[in-house]
Image 1 (cartoon, helix red, strand yellow):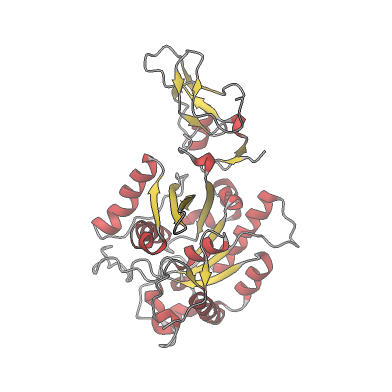
Image 2 (cartoon, helix red, strand yellow):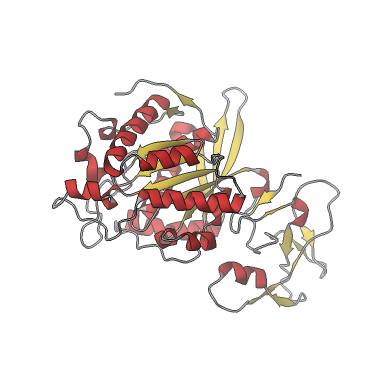
Length: 389
């Protein structure tokens, strides 16, 4: 029996283990301390009283029942993960669930990338790919509006640094319309994580906070070229550099270590999760790239991933990254991961000023390239070789 994967705690369980929470409005059902939910939040506060949870009798038919009857004789449809007691997103058990792990050190721009990517997928992407992207719950809607959209699109300011604590993921449903005469819908649930960069400073914090990486369907490493010493020396006096200076090799190496520990994977085997090595803030380093380079022109993927363009970008970034950090990164990734590709993107199009303002507004560049490549490797979308400019 295929097991369900919780998008919050990443525990796996069978449909028969799904729990329900009583929603009796009359108060006939006693409140109980929810230890499991408190343990998941892990903010040090004591468990709070919540309506009781229960596992219904085994159903006659396979699958998760739509509703269950509490002992107080009140019917409920509120499903929960049996391990962390977070509310189960509607319909998650019947869709393809893809976890996109966005991984990077402090100040690389993960929050900005996610903010702009989701906005792009909600708008222009839908027309070109006959698709729609919608949040699966109010928690995702509220968090994106308050922590992402409000800053970048409404106030036109940089997003504050993500705090080093457990955060809930952003969960979206991506629906593709397939076929021309006989149309059908393909539904994919996407789980995005934006973790604090501090979690990538040591392997211990990775083990404590980021076990989701081992359950990822695709990994998007977001790496900041402005934190690379060789790039800083070439742009000295022209750019403001982050205080952080995290080596990309360290981020990839720690991630590899955590995944192998969680999965119990032998060092001689490559990890099968596709990896997009994505260098952010391309606008700040464009002058270091040849003028005729693919990194100077955008690409509109019309219904499919443009494989010709993707391969050109991969080779361009691979070459320049080797010049900036040496061949160690390429050696590490090629030995540890079975599928990987290099990308260069700019989420905002320019650096925020000293007050954190995005003066010209958001002007993303190639923001969807690594995401589309991951979908392509997951066989969600197709790819074709096409002419490039």
